Length: 186
Image (cartoon, rainbow, N blue to C red; front, side, top):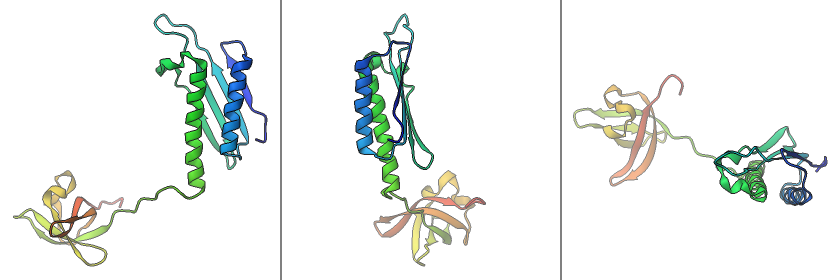
């Protein structure tokens, strides 16, 4: 880490035991992702409420290269396990670790890319029987039923109209499900 971590206590006196725990968690993060440039941790002990115990909050702000930040915190009001400051710290650092893992996966190119759904055109329609065929990009015909057309749009389809669809294997060959007529934004 390029800068020394900053640990701030709000609404409570500084505690060496809490500081040691936070520093140990920061060291774990640094071993996991060695390019953290700055870290600021704020431990907050809010006011006592009539029906709740003292709920601690741990907020973390990590700065990474490329102007990328990881920010975690603000969940003390929802979780009564945070009546223990060490649980609040643990939970915040687990969330930071998950965000860092996601960031590392993106850097390594290990994020799953979803293929765009195929685009076809209506080749044949049989309105009386409630089905039709889409000409796929590879020139095959893909069957679809009127119930597969989104927003009850079957009656608005015409031969030659462009559609986006999801293809699956049916009993008699390929069939389309979730057929959507192409609009001006497609």
